[in-house]
Image 1: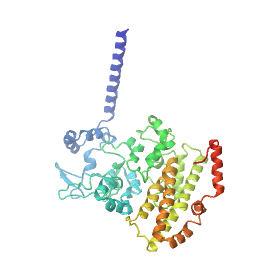
Image 2: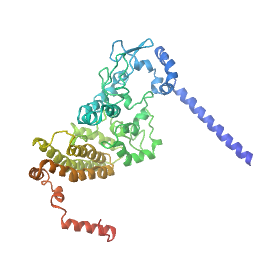
Image 3: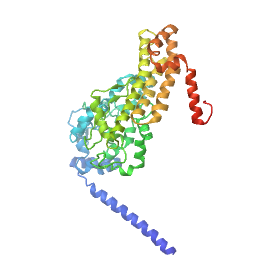
Image 4: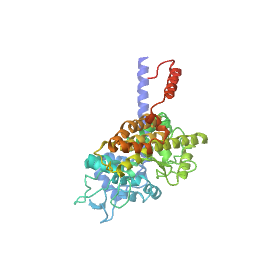
Length: 450
């Protein structure tokens, strides 16, 4: 009996090894590489120096199509960023202009998208915080690694280490092109499957001011994805929701992916109808067409009434945030600036910090929570934080900066007309307290509301 058990174990082990070898042989057969004479020189050195780099390329779709090192890195003499390297003129930094040789549609869409303009954010208030309140070192390894930067060169033609490496999505390249394809299609496999993973977007879309990946993970969409990863067919060339996969959507599904009615797009904003970035949200140009595209994606899994009702709740939420908090806070701040009581963007005073974080952190979290069906981010990480800081930080700081007379004038003009602030102006009424007590008595069997 024991000998038979040992035999069965050994047979199982050998069978597993055989299957692994067959799989490896099959994978190698599928990735027959085509290499130019120039690229053979590259591989001769880099296979010893950076073996993983070469192996990832060997396993890529590029390798099977004859797209090798020289295809992407070759350069004309005298071109921006060009350098002489072992008898060849190359450039280190591969840009969308290089990718355009084979992918003109994708490059055009990406170049016209908000992604390609992400570096512009560093010319805004965010950059003042990074460069001055923080420091250039923080901007180099923080801000620019997502938003992009402007790579510079040293006298010897090598890239300046203060500006490279950088795969920020809005990078301004030496050849004048904007963007970085490798922000999503990581070197040197340039995998479709990897670019479709939610975590690829989560490299930049996370944290206190835009926690899209955390919201996605909280949502039913993210939960379904985690439970059904094996059914997503992420490696397929055709990746049409409702046809090639049905289990869950990823970020790429909603913002870029193909449906039976529309093709894949590399313009990640083509289906976004609200802008949720600024202090006060507004509808984007052609918002109805943008929304129709997103609704088409939603309809793969949801009925029309479900989708329409979701958008009703979403619109109501954004308008509520705008009207109750964002608009009055912005108007009051501007009034203080106009009256000479406050310097714009002067972070030496607490009021500016409070205002900034209300819209830039808490307000964005709330709006993105509503947009992506993340209830905890819509309320506890969102509107709760906005409201707490609006009433307990912002308005008291306004009173201190304005003085009693101007504060009374500002609240009468910007706060009192909205009845939703009545509880703050006049206190909670006796009737409201009784209703709250009644609810708690019914819900918790007579326990007193705390």
